[in-house]
Image (tube, rainbow, N blue to C red):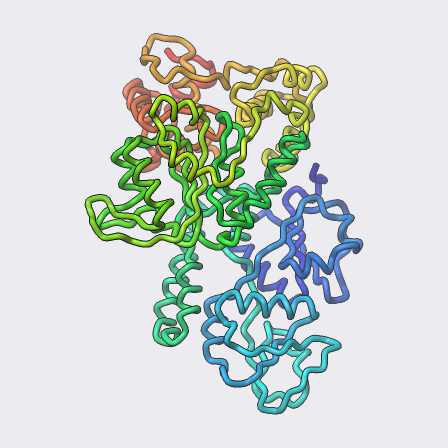
Length: 568
C-alpha cells in the first residue's frame, strides 16, 4: 500500500541535477498539478531526505542498476525503469558531427556513458565513432577531437576545442504514457499528448529530410518513432498479478515468447486478461517502440473489419499503421471465413492487398490473437480454418479462469486498492469470505467491477459483505427489448452508470468510450447494441448531448433513475 504522504508523489532518480531538471520539466507538462516530483541525483551529494515509500521512476536501466543495494531501495513502493531517447534538437545536432574521426562521449559514470552510446547506436548513429569519457577514464585525444555531452561541462577534458551539448536524454513516449497512466491522467489528455508528440516529430522530420537523405537509418528512426493516436500498449508484465502456479508459469513463458517474433495465440474466458497479456508481450519485445494496434472482431461487422485491417485505396489500414509493430486480433473466433482466408495470406506471405485493390504491399508486423471460444470445435463445425489455427498457434498461452486461482483474489484486491483505486479502505473478513466463495463467471474483470462498486457505496473505512451487490456485474442478455415501463433494466442502468462515471472523470462519453468502459468492467455489449440503447435512452429523456456532437451526459431524470436503480 502507498504511504499517505507519497500518494501523489513521484521520486525521480537520475544521474545529475541537469538531467533531473529536464525530465521534471517533461513530466510536469503532462501530470496533474498536485503531483509532487522529488528529484534524486544519484551521482551527486545533497540528496533529499526521504520518509516513507514512493512511486519511483529511474531515468534509465543504468541508474536503476547503480541504485541497487543502496538505501534508496528502502523507500521504493513501486518503480519503473524509463527508456531514454533523444529530442529532435539533439538528433539534428548529431547529424552535424564528423563521421571520419573519433568523438568523445562524456557522462557522469561508466554505466551512463555506455548506455548513452548504446541508445545512439540503436537510433541509427552507429556510424559515429564514439570513445567513452567519464570520471576515472583516460581516453586518448587531441585538441581537434570533438566532444559530446548531455550538458555537464565539468567532465570536459582540458584542451578540447569543440564541445557539442546535445541536451539531456528524455523519456520516450512509452515511458511517459506509463507514468501518466499511473497517476490516472484522463484518456483524452493522453491522446492529446500523443498527437502533440506526433506533430513535433513530423515538423522535425520535415526539417531533417535533406540532411538525413544520405543516412537511411536516421530517416527510419524518425519515421518509426512517430506515436500514432491510440496505437500503444498500456500494460506490462508488472501489471499481471498472481501467485498461483498457473499464472507464474504463464508469465514466465510469455516473457520468453516476447523476446521472439513468434505469432501468439491466447485463449481464455472473457475477463481473464487476454488484452493485458498481449500488451505486456509487445512491451517486452524488440518491437516495443513501434505501434501496437488492436481490433475487436466481436464489435465490428465483417465489411468494416476488412476495411479497418487492410485499408482502401484512399486510406491506410491497421496492418500498415502497425508497420514494424504488433497487431492484436481480439476475439478471432468471431472472424468470418472470408477474413480468415485474407489473414492466412498475411501470415504466410507477409503482404496485404487493400480492399478493392490489386497491388501487393509488404508488411512487417507481429500477430497476437486471442479468443474466448473453442476454436477446435469451430474447426470441427467448419467455422474456423484449420490451417489458420496452426499458423496462429506458433506459440500458445491459456489464461485460467479466476475460479481456478481463487487464492489470487486477495492479492488482486490489495493491488487495485493501492494502485488503481488509490483507496485506504480495507476488506472485512466476511466480505473476503463472500468473494472467495463466488464462482466469478466474469473472471478478473468482474472482480474488479465488484470492488469498484463496493468502494463507491461503502460509507466507512471498511468494505463489508453488504457492499457487494452482484446484480451490478451480471452477464446481460443483449436481445432484451427496451420497455420504458420495465424496472431495473440492467443494460440501461449500466450504460447510464458508464456515462456518469466517464463524465466524473472529465472525459467525453461517446459510444466508443462507453463500449470500452463497459468492457473493462466485465460487461460485453456490442457498439451496435449500445448505439441502439442510447437512442432509446435519449428518446426517454434520460441522456442528452450537452458535451458536443459525441459527448453524452445524464439529464436530471437520468441521474434520479440511476440513483434509484430503476428505469421508469
